[in-house]
Length: 488
Image (tube, rainbow, N blue to C red; front, top):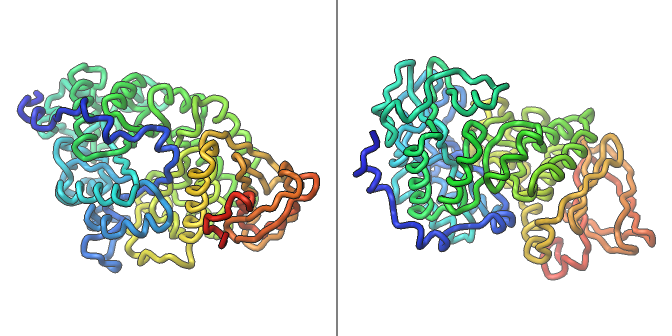
């Protein structure tokens, strides 16, 4: 049973103070998010040589204190928010699937993961993030707990320490939504007992817990793990109790499945665009037309695509570098990542062009890169974020203006969002492509913000461009005066 004393200790008087720390969906729309896997980002001892074999699936020593020491690396690239791994206590030991270094195998939601640091370390991290005027997003797992082996020891779970708080065990049929919501993930090595989120006691407890979590740690936003595995209406009340922006995970490509979830939370990870963009840009044979079509579908079928998280990599999918090491193609994906519709989300190491494929290979220790800022994509993300932050400050309609995708050829598209015009290609580094982009004001002076080259549209608003495999981000020169961008 749930122990009242334990629950009481974990709850706070939150309702009167909730608005003082809450970050709204509209405020998150302005942000650019850097996703951190806490165990793999930075060590508290500052080491850049400590080994970390992804195949071992064990803790490598990254921590909240290590993250504090490297916040300047993130803010230096212009990111204005970070998303960190789940913070709660995990099951211990090395299971047949490794250790719980990632944070998705909860044991006690009322305690913190000591592998990541102390409560003071976490509070210091969040205070340091806020001092840089950045937001903090915390990954939360409310769908399941974790248990090693077939025998489920419910008494180990806090606060849900009885089988009556969980669905009866069954294997998920991924073609059946009811089965997805009530059955269990996991395998013979590691079971993931599925919380009964139809049970009112479970629901009430989780709502109080989430409100307390947000207030106690001054959290600005939540990432909702496994959102599709819980009935939709549950999320409405949970997010209301939290009082902050909620971005959910529904891992599907189909707009007809993912879009309805936005009726119950602020936004979702934009998996359809991620998958279409990966297919389109990692090869010269990529289907650019499919990306253009899918972008239109997402805009028309989702309530507000500008509140979705736009991403190209995460901890569950192969890194882009496992598909292509062509730096020009990776730059095109970076430009789409930062300047298309939605809240940009960049997975740690994407800026280093890491090449890990499927989990666990895509969870490398970033410190082994030495946090290099040259000969990688760090300059690209820095320029893109600096530009986006400028546009957000000076032209706020950019955030809610839907991008228009246009197919210029089998290898070139334009993405026009307000006065920002992206010209993107999958042709590859050094491949010369001559195109004409129209739709500008007559005789408009333009700056390409990644190369700082200047050009002028002709009297009919047409601009000839020469692509060499890299992306172009065009913007009126007059709107950059005083920004410092490209020396203006």
